[in-house]
Length: 303
Image 1 (spheres, rainbow, N blue to C red):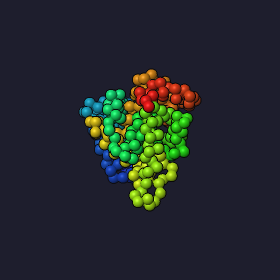
Image 2: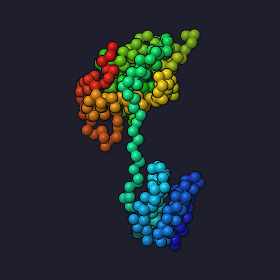
Image 3: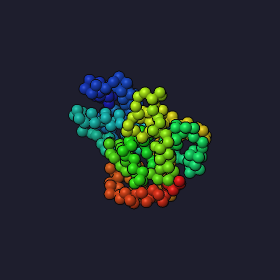
């Protein structure tokens, strides 16, 4: 049987045994048809004849056509699955894609604000009244503490330890960590908690506030993630910035490193969970983390 015949068997296997959708089998079929055609042009028509060099030549061909890294990765994944199927079904012992790595996607550097842009963002006039206190605290805390949006909206009053200079954050995987808060972020948060949060409640006095949430909507409910996105976007636009909450987190990390922060302390503050990069940070002392924060964050010693 030719390679093309085995491709048809493989697509049948995906449909019948794996329950793959029509969209998936069509995508695999198109990717493998191009692969089979390339092999035929090299005089390779049977599974036993395919060499690793044929596969790497096909990958190089794909990259030369200008395909994006994600598209190349998908096609290589289809080829690897196909050869694994051939070996598993006893068609051949030849496995030219064994241990063949998927093409690496280029690292996309995150958007980062300059310190001047951050100053422009945070020194602008905020809305009047209760909402202004809240919005300023949100942006100061996102930048001042490097939090994710989900961590900010999930903050509870019981986790705010202003006297200790920490906020207890529930990060990815339900892991709790203590994030230092000081300077401008601490001042904005104190102002919000004292002058705005107690008064964010349903109109007319009916209904109750969320008793636990730090950041509330004008109706006294825990603030939604999308509302935070909208707030950050609006204040960014006011000073000519296309702004996303995660940009503030990236800017926090970048400015800390530029200021000389210890990488292990920064890892602790950000709450990264990838085991390959976090093992050495497990035992970072909290006092050391706070010292690094106070000495390196550009707004940590403001009012």
